[in-house]
Amino acid sequence: MEECAKPGSDLYYVLRKVAPGKRAAYLALNALCQNLNHTVEHYRDVSVAEKKLVWWHDEIARFFTGQVSHPVLKHLLSEREQLSQQSMQALVEANALSLKTHVFETRAALLQHYQHLGGIRFALLAGLFNKKLSGQELRVYHELGVVAEILRHLVKFRHFLQRQHLYFAMEDFQKLKIDPQPILKLKQLDTLVPLFDEYWRFATERFSVLNLSSKNPLRLEVLLQLKQANLYQRGGWQVFTHQLELSPLRKLFITTF
Image 1 (tube, rainbow, N blue to C red):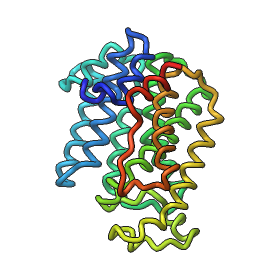
Image 2 (spheres, rainbow, N blue to C red):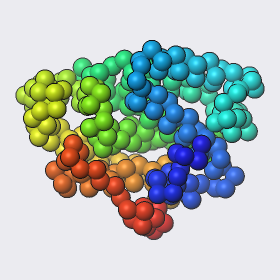
Image 3 (cartoon, rainbow, N blue to C red):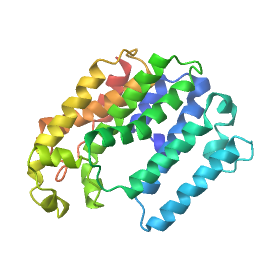
């Protein structure tokens, strides 16, 4: 579980802003989400990935009866009353859709998918601190989760493209008259720069209007993602030839001051 928050990682610095009594649960829930993401984003055999997701769906059901076996979920047992079985299983289903869908037809459908991947995750994490979130608070965390997924998919676009998953909608390609066929063959990649800029601006603007404390761990997580995306944006989105990462010192400053 500690692997997902190893020194130098974003989560390593974000955890410093989580109350000590909640750190184990916060880390465990993030580890669960990372495990699900890894299952569908790094698989070798799609049938094996599908079976793993079915197992996780059933394991979450067992978690809510106290019969859990996976160590990550065991670390969440003390927080079980503050978690939702429906939401946790919805995360599994969202990852199953990631596995099956290589391109979304509309941006609205893509953003809805991001809401299921990120919005639900962020709402569950926020619930660890306050199980009586208002409707407005839930909307803010769902929105923050959407921004997080937009940024994650921009920064890791090369990985997804190599697996033939296009995380821009078909209507985006049609609107800007970009032919996706050469891109799927890893050619004419510079034609994607306008789309990278558009999605980056969209995420930046949505993040800027969210009313959250500057020390909120979830806000800090997305702020680190935004700063890293900014590095790529200033360099013209060379995500196919360069790997950029905020320095550990920079991450420390961002999450401290």
